[in-house]
Length: 88
Image 1 (tube, rainbow, N blue to C red):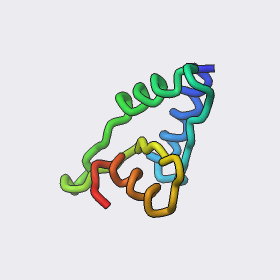
Image 2: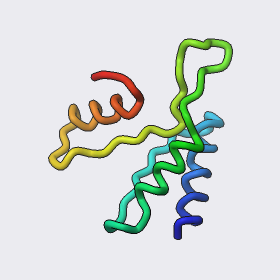
Image 3: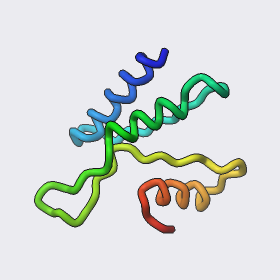
């Protein structure tokens, strides 16, 4: 299942990076099945990149954000911004 998940995630990232569509993905599963390992590999293989011709903006192919236990729109947005290295 790990290889299948990696393949699906790579497909989503490639679609998003090509500009064809916006893609969101959640990694869910029981404890101990490798979610954290998978996410770490994805983050390592798809780091933020400088936008071509600009040099000042970063493009984040992957953003990692843990959703808080009792999420609100604000707290979820803050976690997403933190995952991008930004402050809310």
